[in-house]
Amino acid sequence: MKLTGIKDLLKFIQHLNDISGAAWYRLSHDRYDAVMVSIDMVGVRLELEFFEDHIEYSVFEGDESVHDDQERLFALLETNRD
Image (cartoon, rainbow, N blue to C red):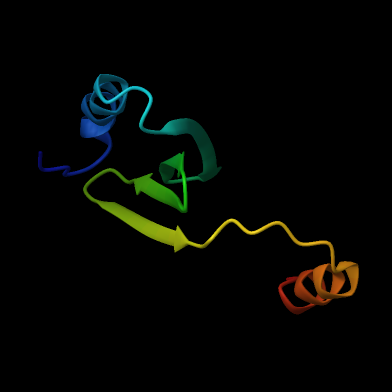
């Protein structure tokens, strides 16, 4: 499957539905010029942005460990604030 932009969004969503159970996804409109599809899977989160004439995506991988160190939590939040 080749994704060339926003016109392929429904085709991509149908593909996600066809592989049901493999991924949870949601749509959002965070940028004026794109629609985002966020996909959650075990160990990986994907964010795809569908623009008029192309797509871009980011991959977030991790071990999904559970933490209880609140000092680290607040340090992370402080480090990553705008």
